[in-house]
Image (cartoon, rainbow, N blue to C red):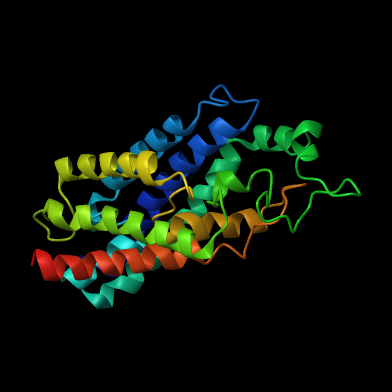
Length: 262
């Protein structure tokens, strides 16, 4: 498989992943959405179906959709290290495209939400402007794009992302590879999607379970760049945790596989 095939497959698959995943977050967040306040269960299943859809679309490249998965598979020996940068580039671009598409789909809801006095009242400072520096409430729509912790504790937040990602990647590595040697097969893809739902329900509460560096970083960059009035800050002080944690988790899962299962 050529580098261009890998890049295009991962870009499109990750874009669909973020479109549907970010879309369910938007659907639950916005008052002018039919799914408003549908809750955490809706979000976790929405992300699970997003993984399922994106993975089927990107089956040609093995449907990594996640640098942590790519790193884990490379450590396992299922992916050449020379191909890793191509996978990562496609995943990052796809994540940003998906985030932009969420903005397009919910354009009217973004405008209504970011001009709603009740919404802005929870994020304003003394002069009535949105507080750009407020960490726990970094922006009234940041949660649609990126994750954030309920309790800010660097050690706990980092450990949560490492542990959750290790579970995800180890489950992928032990499911068995498809015939092309690049990823899980058709049934395995469904099982991975269910694992993502399970991680969200059981381990997602503390940090929102990024478990994927580009899932968080790409949309966070888009949040920072989009011309959204009153959007607040992008919480860059926290942004390294959902990047570093999953990368460590992916590498740890690869190491555990080599020791225990290879």
